[in-house]
Structures are given as structure tokens and as C-alpha cells.
Length: 393
Ligand SMILES: Cc1cc2nc3c(=O)[nH]c(=O)nc-3n(C[C@H](O)[C@H](O)[C@H](O)COP(=O)(O)OP(=O)(O)OC[C@H]3O[C@@H](n4cnc5c(N)ncnc54)[C@H](O)[C@@H]3O)c2cc1C
Image 1: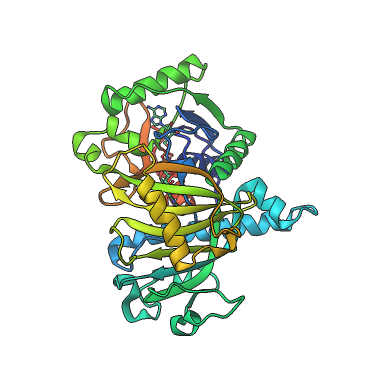
Image 2: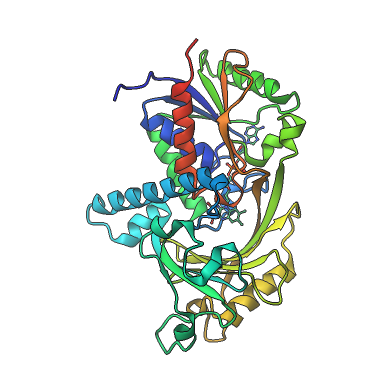
């Protein structure tokens, strides 16, 4: 295949979509400058990426309108699998947990339970799960048999109506962001840590980016990729800005690494927005317990009632008993809140329809809701394809 012309691309934002876009561009031989107000290592309510769960569990459905989401998620599952297999194969004598700790990424068994029937539980035999043929080790759990679990066997929540198991990929968001940040800089990405002015619309953002580049002695660029997450609402046109909304999440970091990731949705006797999930952070010795999806809620304070519901739910359904101490309690390390970047219509991964601004093509990669990690490769590679298809004149 002919090598695409090398282009200088400015990536605005250093969350997971910004970093993966940078990496995919660099791996195709392009030149990248990242401009971002927050970078890995920072913690702020305005920077969603460090607050993620997180594990691979596609939220796409089986309808044709979700085809793109399915392709983004399945590509990322495949790419992460390859990345981890390569890392373990080239680990030069390091043990598995060391490799995982360096990357903040690892394979983990997953269990997923529903307390109420929805489209995904149709037939209760896996036909409603589009990714059953994408992930490794997929199977439907025999709930009746496992409700009788004996010592040493995996328990299932007694209120579950369906359960599946598969091989998932779990990540430690702060660690994985730092890992990617180092990789892209080692590959030559230049990072400029600053905030660009968002008060004069998209054209103002482009002018501000160009001014930042000039100050650094960079006079040419081919395109800007907007990876600003929820902040895109500050400078895009009203109709687009109104599509963006927060989906508040709250989690608890506890001591110890759970044996697997477990999720229970459609909980009995709980608010619709509640769910329970356990996500071990590979190589970190800690686990995230969640959570909730509160649409339109910008509350930054940790809600004590939600903490109690998470911890009580874990105990009631036996979702993470291996981490409870002799007293039956978890050792809590911290509580956190984050805002998933919701967007009506799903993520926006496309070129700006109105053509160039000040000589630069504009592309978008934002609005990933609760899927910005698990779709990261698929979306970034779509951006690379778009950039390579754009004209140089
Ligand atoms: C509780 C919770 C659980 C989650 N679990 C999962 C999961 O299990 N799996 C999964 O795939 N996803 C999960 N997510 C979702 C995932 O975290 C998000 O989709 C993703 O982090 C969004 O990244 P982003 O880069 O779009 O936004 P952000 O991380 O907010 O990054 C935006 C970037 O743009 C920069 N920026 C914004 N405005 C400006 C400006 N004016 N000038 C310069 N820079 C600017 C910011 O500084 C930052 O670098 C979860 C999220 C939460 C909150």
C-alpha cells in the first residue's frame, strides 16, 4: 500500500480520544502536536478520562443504527488484545503483573448480570448480545445451577434474570493515560499545555490554536482534531452544543484487586440510574466499585447515599466478597465523581462539514459517553482515514 503523505496534525485535548488519535496518527507516519489544558496526571472535574471505571463492555445494540459503534468497539477489543499479547511476548522476563502495571491494562474474566429483562436479554440465550462472537470465552451463565454455588465457585446474584461471561480487558485509567502519553511523546508528539480561547466559536478556537502554534515557532499544520469532550459545547454552534450533556458517575476505589470484573444492572429496589460494577485495576492492587449514570447531573460533590448504596449492594449480591476484610468491610482508598461526555446521536467522529477554517481542515472525535476507552482505537483510526482522504489544496 502506498504510504500516505506525512501531515502535521494538531490534536486539541489529551483525554483518551486525543491520546489514541495522536498515537494512531504517529503510527501512520504523521506529525502531531497536542494542545491541552489538562494532561495525564491532572485531576479535574473538567477532565473526564482519569475518572473512568473501566473495562471493555460494549453498550451498542443490535440495530443497524449502531453499526458504527459496534465497529469502533470491536476494533478496540481486537487492538487491545494484540497490544497485550505483544507486550507479554516481548516482556523480557518480566512477570505478567509487571507488564500490566506498566501499561495499566490487562485481560480479566468478566461476569455481567441483568436484574430485569431488556432488549439484550431477549431469549435469555445470548442472541441479544451483538459482541458474543467478538470477545473470547463468551458464554451464557446457567443461573439456576450457579445460585447453588458451593465454596470456591463463583456466586451469582440471586436477583439476576440473566448472566453472561466473557474475557474482558480492564484498565487503570490514570495509569493507562500516562502510558499512552509517554508512548506518543517518545514517538515525537509535541505537547503544549495551555487552554485555548473558546469564547468566539469554532473559528475563534482555530485562531487561538494557530496563535499557540506560532508562539512555539510552528508555522504550518494540515488539520485540527477536536477531542475536547464535554468542553466542545463551549464553542460549537448552538444546535450541536445542545446535543452534549453530562452523565454523572460516582465510584469508590478500594484496596486489593478483585479476581474479575462483575457488573449488575437493572437492580431491584434501586433508582434507575444505579448500577453495580467491580473493576480491578490491573497491576495496581486496587479495584473500582461503582456506580451510577445520572443524566444531566453536574454535581461535583461526592454523594454519601450513593456510596452507601454501592457498598451495601456489593455485600447484598456478593459481587466482590474477596476484597472484604474479616469485619466484612471494604478498605476504602478514595471516592470520586466524573462526568461522561454524553451526546444525543452518539459520538461525533467526522470532518467538519463547512470545509477548511483559516486553511486548516477540522475533524471531530468527541461525545463518547461511557465508551471513550473501549472505542478508542476504532474512532482514532477513523480519524486517520479521514485525514488521509482530505485534500492538501
Ligand atoms: C465513572 C465513569 C466510568 C467510565 N467507565 C468507562 C469504561 O468502563 N469504559 C470506557 O470505555 N469508558 C468509560 N468511561 C468514559 C470515558 O472516561 C470517556 O468517554 C472519556 O474519558 C472521554 O474523554 P474525552 O477526551 O472526550 O474528554 P476529557 O477526558 O474530558 O478530555 C478533554 C480534553 O480536552 C481538553 N480541553 C477541553 N477544552 C480545552 C480548551 N479550551 N483548551 C485546551 N484543551 C481543552 C481537556 O483539557 C482534556 O485534555 C467512564 C467515565 C466515567 C466518568
